[in-house]
Figure 1 (cartoon, rainbow, N blue to C red):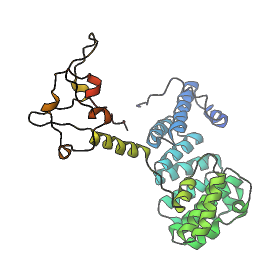
Figure 2: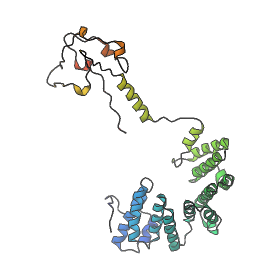
Figure 3: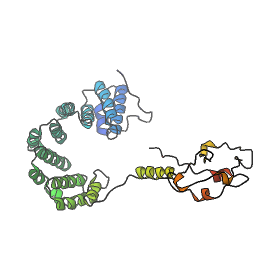
Figure 4: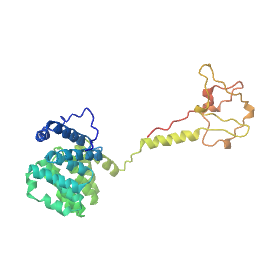
Length: 318
């Protein structure tokens, strides 16, 4: 079996104690190997879901009869929108444990497979009553999403109206619930109410789990400017302002990298240029005015290197 590299600092001891308990059924060496792959799944699933999926497949091949492994494989598949595969893994984990905690994400897989009616059926099943408060809110979000999948906006709004939504206390689910409600209101054309709920979502979103602040700013007509693009525009302006006078019998102002500087000499010497040999007319200058230090007359005996060249701006690396 092909293995993926795992950093030395990943020992496997980082996993949850309940998962470690499940892995006790495996030989010690195998349990450590599986746990290290599960740690990599947890580390990568948000920023590199494809990488997390690859590690989950290894753990699955090593210990497919461990419920925690099936659950991890399900979440990795879900993060990659492999909904059929995710649903199969979640069902397997549920059969092994008898737990209903995966019920909301299983219903969302049904939505991902284009079966919103099945998701709504699951939302009304007795299993929902066995869920804790956080999972019940998650189930409500899934049900509202299913309503929207079926173009039932008003029903989606009503589905989200709940004591948890009306509560002034901030819970882990508050930001996402308020955001979903605001988004549904906006889709229904109720912009004033939507703005109010996006603002409430911002207030409760302490860890930035939603883009409520951006949505609110967009509704208020605030435009965000990419600083990198702005810097690029400034740089192009500076390049255009540099003047190179190059004509028959004329003078060309050298760029920084075109001048050989003798480090051993006190001053770099350049060829004498007689002032009366150079004629610069306004219409010969393309791209902007000469900088102040370039307006000075060239010295009869020669000019210092630094006065004869303009700054060459460097493009920032993206």
